[in-house]
Amino acid sequence: MKQIALDIGLGTGPTLDNFFAGPNVAVLEHLKLWTHSPTRSPVPTYVCGASSSGKTHLLKAVSQALQESGAQVGWLDASMLTPPAFNEAWVAVLMDDVHLYTAEQQHAAFNWFVNAMTPSTGAQRWVLAAGDVPPAQLQLREDLRTRLGWGHVYDLQVLSEPERRGVLRQEADARGVFLSDEVMDFMLKRFSRDLGSLMELLDAMDGYAMQSKKAITVSLIKAMMNEA
Image (cartoon, rainbow, N blue to C red):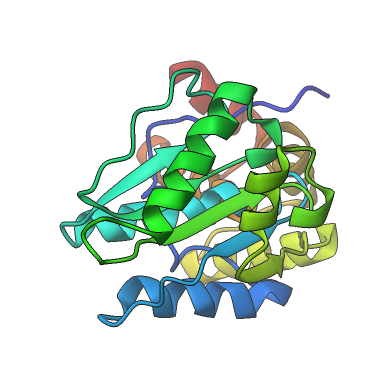
């Protein structure tokens, strides 16, 4: 079946707290420490992993946390065809899906990296980047590829389907919600499989079921999607 992107307008969005780490505790703790520490290390961090491993969730969560603290951050992903110039006001540079960057985006990413690491103001910025493979395997210009591997490198492990089901069941039980095997199958086949998106979906389903005064079924989910 074709996967449906989750965009129901409900849920809190990606945060570090709603990222279900599983075997990825080390990278989550690293990002939490850096994001919340007043003495941040400027050592670059690169996160790699397959689709649905949570890379974008983590980068968006860091961006959101920094902006909520009043900081400005630079953001670049493969959808931004004309990247903006580096801004000295940024405290961090976040670059998502670097493996998809065009030549122009690679040029901007390299410029951002160099400016972040050797700023005229004397205050270094943190660089957090993500791609689908380790830095050494990236098909990018050499100067950018090597810089992305300068600092901390974390390889995200995708949670297995039994682990996803276990987390969904635990979260549903905590809410007093029953999820049948049919509903879980539908969720895992038709929606984004990263746990952050699945938790947002569970939030939406729970709210819609309470509003409708009905149990959560596949029919109810389809009705919710039709009204979204």
